[in-house]
Length: 198
Image (cartoon, rainbow, N blue to C red; front, side, top):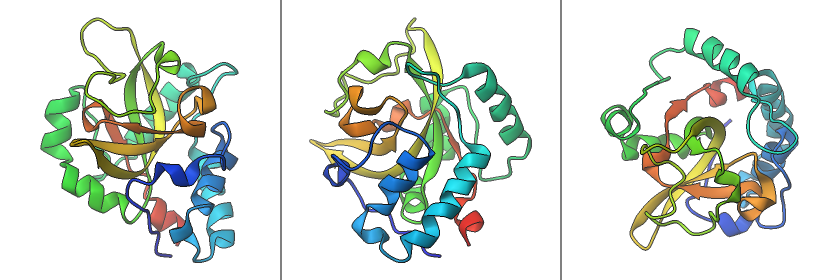
């Protein structure tokens, strides 16, 4: 199955999705106009994929760190050339996964991405992309890891961004659909979604 993702149309999601869950992700993808080639087939398969591999969240916000840490370990053990892990966001992101590669990848499939975020990220406004409201600052902020689904990309006022589905829902940005600068992506976890959907 060929998966087509659009570039930078966050408005398409407004009002159509709720808080992030397996159904949130599958419903949001099924609502994309470019995704009209058999979404009734795609959705349950992607749901199964997420149910097998998804990250869990507590009642308030954020990941269940203990469980997710174990899942990250499992994922890393089975990683191949497509799974790139690094502790240095900017240096390794641009060295190992350049933006052109990532954009090409996103045009064929969604990607799961782990990003470092401030513990109070859910309180910050994230509807506007700028270089001043980045959630990740390696300057003493207490950071936690957060798994998101990268769905597309775009540019606002010269600032590149990637589109994500995240767990904080409406209180964070556009019904759980938001934007994040490239430098805030910590790792790309490629679970070969297209192969699993085939």
